[in-house]
Length: 293
Image (cartoon, helix red, strand yellow):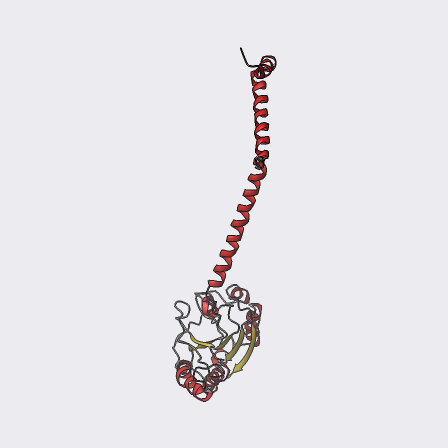
């Protein structure tokens, strides 16, 4: 026979069913344990809330991950080496397809003097020839960076730095420029193609703070693209055709030293000069044209 203190729960089990009575009995036991814990000075066990605790953990994990990503990006940015951007690059594009007059040869000397006078510290000067090889394989005849002549030069002596500039930098540039007096006896003059190749060179990119170009040429396009000489094996050059192949020259200062030749009087008209001025301006360049007879 059951003890008296267990008879009541047993009757409830018979009346409500075993499952319901067992649940009630367990709940009672949990309440008794809680009261005993309070008497012993221990806080009762907190009720478990899985949704709230799980969400808090997920939010904390997301915050930690984002913080680590931001810190990583900042560290990568500060550890990157500084991007070197040239301060200045002047390109000399010289036509040697025809002999030069005395005045035009003197123009070459004026180009050398201009380079010597205007090239800033750390400025680059590159000399290209405009001839039959320019449309196929283009490399500068010489490309050099001017040493520091003014504040910040390693020798801390401007007079000595100027002598170094004239001795190490200028001779190569001057020799390449003056050699244009010797004509290459070639009829091809791929002006537009050469301009496009120069502008594809990373050393003449828009990242430069200052870009300039000097064209010492009769500006008569003659290549497989088109011709201004009346050849029958190539299309006739038009402004629309040339414009379609002009590179982007945004911000480039262009000086055209327009070489006049008596044998090309029919081609070298005022309209021809204006066509080239318009082509360069539409390509984004600042252009100036000077005729040299």
